[in-house]
Length: 372
Image 1 (cartoon, helix red, strand yellow):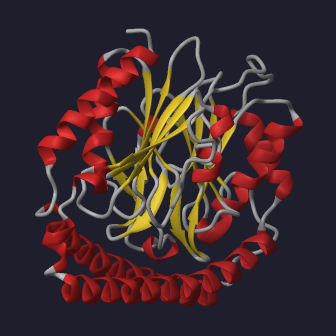
Image 2: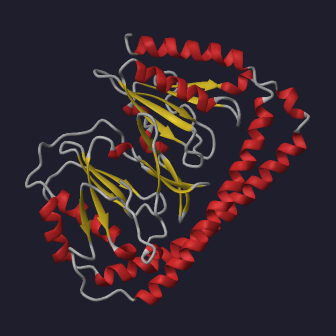
Image 3: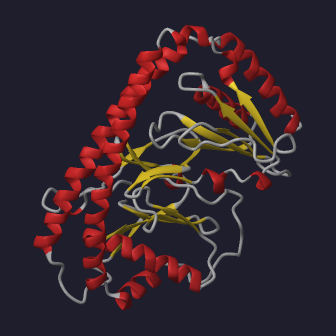
């Protein structure tokens, strides 16, 4: 359902997402954006909202993501609703898993290491630490001390350069939003929204999924989007030149709130003040920017404008924004390569047979929690 942008207008869409098909129900809980790294872990993994939370510790290459994937597969195999939380820097890795047993509070596992560091908030009663570093032979790593220090320093530099580039992108994006606000026609938008929105809410419900989730990320692969919301919902693609699609999403949120609809909003990974998707779970209806949906809302064509965009200035801003987005992507890719170098060093020091036994113990613990 990805929107196809013709070559003539492609420069109006510098953040066209790469669609990512992944198993099951998948989200992100952190993001790299114009203001730096931001984490939603505190909201997604609130201790008081869960029956139990397992917090994984250990350095790179200790098997945290592999353990999380095994647990996610276990829950899905047992027919338990399972949400996979993907890593925003490496979408092929997992940062967390949340299980939703039918008659109990959710149970979660998460990577509690930087940059979303987390300890046992309510130790014993809810939170339990699992230290995979306990299965590491630190004496092996001592011989690589200088190499590890060098790689960490280089990785930190690449991240700083990436965030510097994204900060500049944010300045361009802010100016583009100013142009969009000047020409956006609220009355026309209201009529367009009314034409596609159900006349009344199906019911006032509540999805058990936590707040703070995202479907998009920006990192080594550029701007990526998980397709999890598109699988079982009718999609209304929201379009608009140079920021008007984001302005239209603001109007959709306001309309839904005013009419009493229950909905979930998913912020843009680059700019949390912008909304990337809005889901009406009861109606199985999804408003999604940058998508060619079953229906479409176009701020330019259906909502109209009070005036024309200053296309020359907007194209210049978008061209500069694209340059710095690509620069940020390249720095994230270099940081990722350095991280994999670290993982190779740490992997060589791990006793993975012991971790396999610990994983078996954890799965038995989950079976008891779920009364399987």
